[in-house]
Image (tube, rainbow, N blue to C red; front, side, top):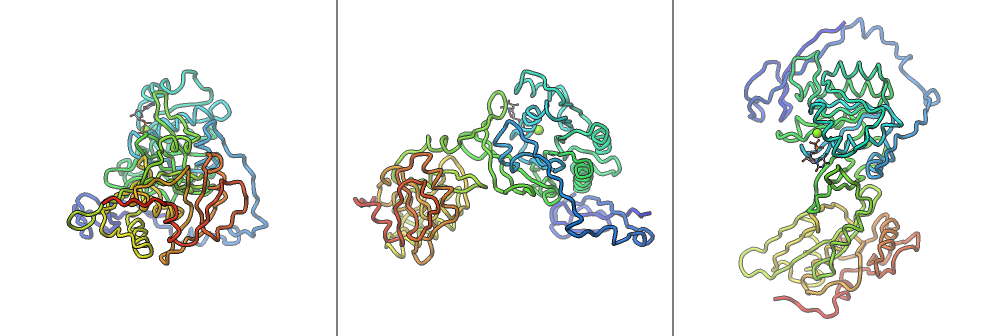
Amino acid sequence: MSKAQSYFECLTCSYQTVKWIGCCPECKSWNSLDEIVTTKVDAKYKAAIQPDKHLFTLADIKLEEQARITSACSEWDRVAGGGIVPGSFILVSGDPGIGKSTLLLQISTQLSPKHTIIYFSSEESLPQVKLRFQRIQKTTPENLLFSDQSSLQAIIEICKSKKPTLVIIDSIQNVLNEETNALPGTISQLKESAFRLMKLAKEHNIAIIATGHITKEGTIAGPKLLEHMVDAVFYLQKEDQWQTRTLRSIKNRFGSINEIGFFHMKGDGLQEVQNINQHLLEQTKNAPGSTLVSSLEGTRPIFLELQALTIPVKFGIPQRIITGIDHKHVVLIAAILEKYLHIPLSKHDIFFKISGGLKTKDQTCDLGIALALLSSYFQQPLAGKTIALAELSLTGQVKPIYNIDIHAKECKTFGFSSMIIAQDQVLHKQDGPPVKRISTVHELLLFFPAEQILD
Ligand code: TYD
Ligand code: MG
């Protein structure tokens, strides 16, 4: 037996109160309080719990090896950590219109003859889903069933009776738990729906993929709230000028995080871009201020073209306009160059970006940032197809990076003529392009023999 109780929680700052109030006293947001219904477990239930029944030694725990559910889409499988794990609960989130429904419909279609799949479209009507389906595929797949049910109880009952391998819930914000009065998409509805669906996934070994929008209120009332409850969270984003959609794993209990998949939105759905590095290199020109680096996203090295522009300040405070990389990081490397090479970057405006509007946080780009700044300052491109792979310390030392062999292999594949690395970098495999080793930032000047400074 348990007693139901309720309280109110602010969606913005999590302030709690027993009575509803229009304006949150903590963060001053209006209409942000949402009712949360809780139940208190009584003493009889607690007394009935037998601790020994619920505790196991490692030897008692049985492992069941289950094959992952793989699709024909290798970019999806890569992000999922090699395929969907049966009984896992995945959240795919992103802005409205980014392509979540399209992607999941394509994945379902590819898996359908082998597996039973139910697609719950609570957001769009079934004729709308059919229209989308006709855009992406002409032949009707077997074992792929559609439903416009949005009731949580109905979804659970249908799944229990049909026992599909995979269930798509599009979207979780539209799922309605009939047992509470709250509107779909509210904090209590979302949490309750996610909890019950997780239970369904684990108890019946059904993989569930739910979509969730990033809401206007920010990330609080949206899918961010659910991230700790689910097994994996993938973000579908549009990052660059080429309209490439990136699917990134933010959390994955069954695979590596930050794994990234690339897609292009075409007239007939999302098309995977398997060879993204080829695509990125095709856009690159050997020009002053441009340097190539490699950044590890999950397990895959991605080439990035760093672009710098340094211009002497005519008046006022120098500008630092930096996108795609931490602003402070570029400023710090400019300071290292000024200190040890006496390059007066503090008297220059610095404009810095990553080509294509891509972003990185990888420390492997340090040397590339320094070379891009110097290359713009001296108005000289780096010779040949060169890549820079090292970290810089505040003392002006060039430091080795982790996973150099993965980068080196990719550089070899794409025909780089040289790789600038740290003096004491250990290469376990000798399958990369020829290397140039340097130990301090002073040696960077060797790459710009005909120094020609733009004033
Ligand atoms: P959708 O999958 O509905 O996005 P989400 O579920 O994330 O809201 O995709 C919507 C956009 O994708 C819409 O602007 C139309 C476009 N689109 C294409 O360009 N090609 C296609 O084949 C499909 C199905 C959609
Ligand atoms: Mg959708």
